[in-house]
Length: 221
Ligand SMILES: Nc1ncnc2c1ncn2[C@@H]1O[C@H](COP(=O)(O)OP(=O)(O)O)[C@@H](O)[C@H]1O
Ligand SMILES: [Mg+2]
Image (cartoon, rainbow, N blue to C red; front, side, top):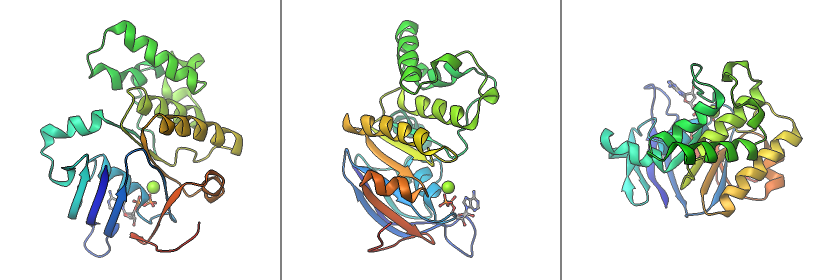
C-alpha cells in the first residue's frame, strides 16, 4: 500500500531531513512515527501527502509513484488521504462547520449529505457545540479536534496525523487515540507522528523510529 525506496529529502545542501528511507506499510496498518524534534517525522508525512517532494527515491502509494506525480494527479491522492498538520492549517475566514465541510465539497455531494456527515464527525470528536465558532477563538485542543474531523470526514484510505495529541493532557489524548483506533479498525491505514512515548507504549503498535533522518534499527521506544 505504501512503499518507500531509498527516499531522501534535502531542504538545504548540508544536512538531509530524511536519508535513505526504506519502508513498507501494508494496507490497514497502524504505525507510529517517533523521534526527537528535527528527526524528520513531519517531513515523512508531508512526502506522503505530496506537500513536499523527495529529493531522491520512490514513494509508491497504491502502486503509483507519487514522487513523480504530475500536479494534476495530486488531487486524487489528496482526496484519498486525510492529514492533520502539526499547525492544523484551519481556515480563519470559515467557521468550524465550514472548515470540516471543505473536504466534502470537492466530492460534489448533496448539501444535505455534507451537513449530516460533518455533524456526525464533529459529534464523534465532541466539538459539535462549536460548529458556528471561528477556529481562531478555539483552544489548541479544540482546534486539534476540528483538524482531525476535517481529515476524517471523507473516509480517507490513508490517515496521516502530525502530533495529533501535542499539548493535550492524558485523558484528552486517549480520547483522540480512540477515534483514530476506530478509524483504523474500519480499514484506514494510519500513520501518527508523535514524541509522546508514553502514549506509543500504551498503544502497542508498530513503531518507526527516526534518528537524524534515518530509520533507527532495533530501538525500543
Ligand atoms: N521547510 C523547511 N525548510 C528547511 N528546513 C526544513 C524545513 N522543514 C523541515 N526542515 C528541517 O528538516 C529537519 C526535519 O524536520 P521535521 O521533518 O520537521 O522534523 P520533526 O517533525 O521530526 O521535528 C529539521 O532539521 C528541520 O529544521
Ligand atoms: Mg514535526
